[in-house]
Image (cartoon, rainbow, N blue to C red; front, side, top):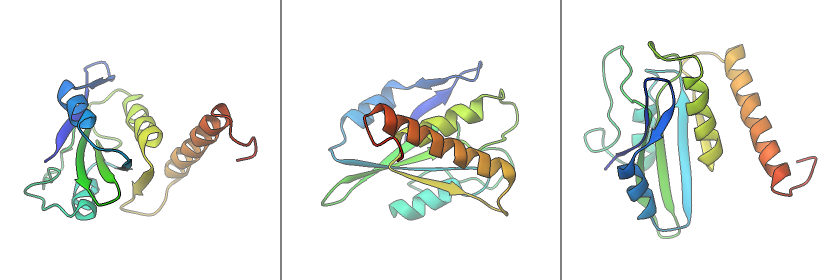
Length: 153
């Protein structure tokens, strides 16, 4: 089953849904969050269904239209003998009708909560993609520093 975790508000903020919070609270530790980010309509939901071993009928919603399918961030978990894998499906970048900072918020959330971050690209790598990954690396380095990690990590 997939559960909505964060949904967009009209002003571009993300709202944590009670349904998603209850779903997360019921999961058994340790958690391994896996987030997939990338351009809208690039196959992120399909990829996550494949990674989680879920059919498209029972997993993340997959569409065949040009409009964005996933809104906000959705979650689905798979329990293994050693951990709970938490799959996070994110709304794609550059979807129409969104405020400029919305993509940045989705991206930052995915970077901050995931143990594994998959940047799904349909085409060749563009400068904007490199900038986003550089930002992710800078965030990780700053959090490591603030958590008392090595200064050169």
